Amino acid sequence: MKRKIFFEEEGIKIINDSIFSTKEIPENSIDLIITSPPYNLDIKYNTHNDKLAYKQYLEFNKKWLSICFKFLKDDGRFCFNIPLDKNKNGQQSVGADLTVIAKEVGFKYHSTIVWNEGNISRKTAWGSWLSASAPYVIAPVELIVVLYKKRWKKTSGSKKSDISRKEFMEWTSGLWTFPGESKKRVGHPAPFPVELPRRCIKLFSFVDDVILDPFVGSGSTLIAAYQNNRKAIGIEIDTNYCELAKKRLITEAHINEKQLFEEEYYAQNY
Image 1 (cartoon, rainbow, N blue to C red):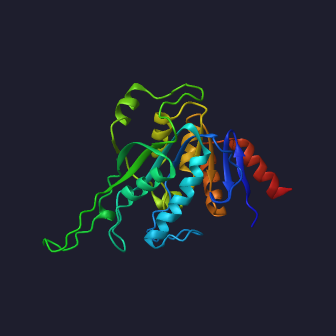
Image 2: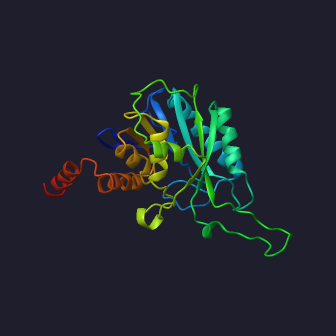
Image 3: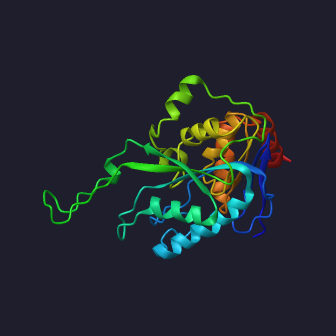
């Protein structure tokens, strides 16, 4: 199937392609990358194999991280939403391992935000119940690792910030507490809430900056970017998820709503 620009309106673009093959993004053009790559938990995506051997999973991440590194401007930032650890099919220090790989690729480390989803039930596993023989400790949190390319101080862009004093004081704390997103509501097996990219966008980018999500999925990053006056590019290999992201941009972000509905009506009736 020939990949293409799936959607493009008002500074928001969806590319129906793989991060490994797209030619649509120039090097040194992106201000901020926000993404949550597949977690390798055997989630049933339409196209991606989410059940790799752990070594293969790390190699997969190193490959796409290397590509994204080239896309960033020298003062570009990267917010990397990943698990703290993994206990399915063997304990793994996923957050630590992926952070090390990102640094090997060339990213420089700034800080780590701990995201408390407040959803303990789906992550609870006691192991040996009431026994010291083999208990499990599972933290109901995820990480947002904050990295950058060459220099932390941002000098490019509009230099216009839109973050409030209250938001700045709250979000510069390394612990963020807000709920995850409902798979059923969104219609995607692993969505993240718009609140996550919204905070990253307002804290780490200027108005009119260009945001990239190389695994855009249900489109949460694009919605947050549009609602906060940023340009954004989402890459998604699955056409159905591209359609989902487009629909959410229309229904939740109200992007060019009238024109898009007129185009669909015309296509169906003429």
